[in-house]
Length: 126
Image 1 (tube, rainbow, N blue to C red):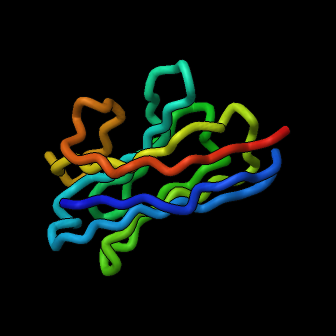
Image 2 (cartoon, helix red, strand yellow; image 1 turned 180 degrees about the horizontal axis):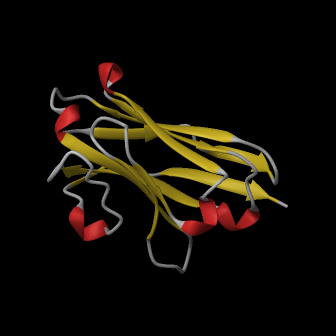
Image 3 (cartoon, rainbow, N blue to C red; image 1 turned 90 degrees about the horizontal axis):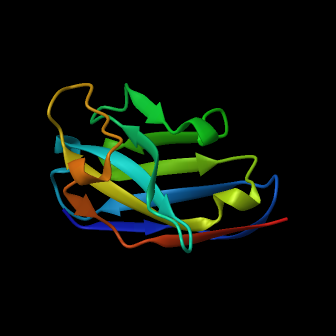
């Protein structure tokens, strides 16, 4: 599994961005996918996760109702649509893959993930 995330950038508060993370391999459907972020001086934190089929999602409370995670297994891609962005959303965002343990598996702990992509910077100006 080789993950590559892209789509970050600079946006004003209240704006939107869509992050994408693509797997160059052929086993994408075997994995639940997650998004994490890390701001300078802070620990990495969970943002959102989605099960292998896309039927189950899980969000960190601060992004619920603003962010939407989805996936397209035909394109080996997971997305994070971020709306109503706030300065506190500024961070490097990483995608990650966790081998699915069950059909509804949506882990929210970094140690449950087996593969990580490089990060993409999201900066929200006030």
